[in-house]
Image (cartoon, rainbow, N blue to C red):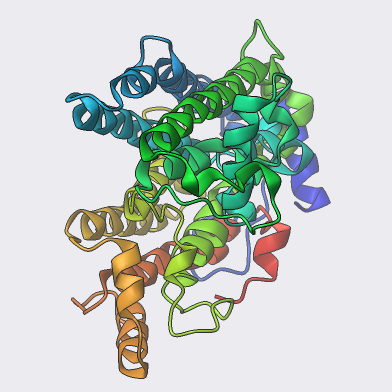
Length: 414
């Protein structure tokens, strides 16, 4: 953020009107001479904290606590293994996993404050997909260690062996074969054990993982709450106004740097990080194949963070800058992306797997470049629609709000 705009915002919060600076955008007509002093930033931050961010963390905390409870769906599934109720109990646990995953996805658009501290440590404990694929061998080792080692502590494990991804592997992967090399002692005899024993041990470790998720969710919730770390007060403090606004703005770029690039462009082969026709193994939820549902939750959260829900948000700031048409495009393209996901019958994994030739690769690129038309690969079309959102983020939004691109986004050439 420029020094001028930081100074402007801090002065605004001291009730001294000063104009914001907006430039370098074809969408900024009417935005010059925007009176930042007339905009209630305190109310905007309070709305984000009280009506969006804290409720999102409270939802994750409640869902994860319910999932890992002694009378909850995971415990019920463990008790049902080998009985006639096993399938129904597993389905119930999977359904609650899905609800929890979607709740976590909604928090990923506001990685602010405690969620961003220590290189997103708490965020990555909930969902480690942003820093790499799940360590399958590590999870398999932990299953055995948690049973045989009285001093086992999941907090000693890396985040790529924890979180919602590990829980997905334990619940959705029907293959009970371990994934470690032969020299790993803990898993050496795993494949020779009875299938029901392996299934039960997996379920019991799923309880450990779910408890760890619940503890992490509680840490995030408590870090914001007034009777905990009270980051809310820091977030609303006028002295931190410029930083709070920039942090919220940076959070929106998760749509570009993670949703578009990591969750869609790499699996479909559009991103150069994938050196094959496509990389289906890179999808975020390979076992449940709910990757598009995750992206839908991200998009819905993006819309809420952009509009502020029913309270003051960035859309009001954009209106005040005189470019309401930008809000219209954000709303239209967000809705179009969600509709496209709702109308898609094949999972992202299935679509990426089908991009297995030069002809399919070309078709995907055409769908990406022409998102207004129906194509063979809806995931590629979806990426094209999201690119429209991200183009407006990088140009119109930055110009209207006089904020800066996040450091990571400045090097992104999409």
